[in-house]
Image 1: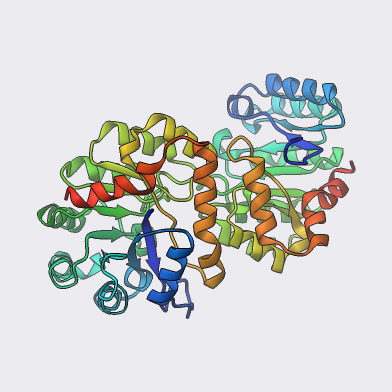
Image 2: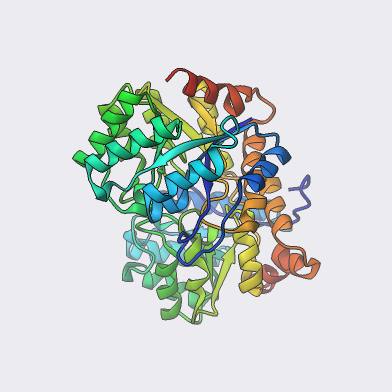
Length: 255
Length: 215
């Protein structure tokens, strides 16, 4: 199984949090749920300092377990386009990261900004998928992100929550309309997942958990199980092998 | 329900029946409740944009045996705290009918909007549908402050959110499945994973809501 939507916790997010998680704790959780690989971005890189915490993601996690722990670079777009290009280059060429993570809701910026267009152009140059938090207006609405994907048809765009509770039909429509949209099933209701499974090409659907975003050790223990239970119940015994593994492999290998 | 050990469910009209065809939805639910009075109780719906017609329909539905009132302001098109809904809440108060509001959908259906409505109508019991899940689950507990008349619906919440409710507001929790958006089995399992105390589980799975609804 591959979990395409995971996070390393560090100081500062959520506000005042001191919860951290080690590579070994992540690997233990992966083993418990038979997850062979997880795609990780660092919460503190999203919220505080992208350069410092992207480096920490590499040094303390990805470097020692590159097959299991795959790095996604978070970017502080407020530092400008040049910074973002440099940070992506460092993360890809220096750290071996495989994608970019954008959380414009937490970071608080409009994604249809020229700086984000430059981020997408850089992603295209490096053949990187871009994983977005979606489903949360005003900065991370699913349609806004789909509009960005439409502008950059050669960049795989992962809707990190497949529209969450209220925008999943926008996510379904976008995935049908645009070849480069992938839906990551994180946080959808069972009814929504059923509808996604019935209307979206299976090869465009990914499994994710959000492990262990924004919370503490308690959430880390229960989150993956919550997500898996929901997917299994929605799938009702149909074949989800590709969703759990093959589609994620193809997405990284094809880029 | 039989498969999951659920002996009674409160059911509401959904989608077009919540937003537009309130009378048809209410009659549909009332018919089901009359057919299976031990298994189902009904939520009435009424869209406040219909004005006087909405008030008449709500009174009619409550007189017709509906136990409580259901709003989904995200599809009915108003903010929970909008004065537009006050006349309907006044009717709920007169009928002693608890009021369920869907929450979790910006910009129309948020926990703190319910907080301010609940403060304005302290005699009415409100159920915070889905307790703000997904993105506003963090607002659910703070929105209880100063509002002893708000209950928390467990539906659509992750285990960790249910754990937080159990620690901070155990007497406010009522079980919900949000079926068919989710399933009974999945939602029951979230509560059982999040709550260890068997007495509290009894409260969440029935005792609290039975008291509120006077079943």
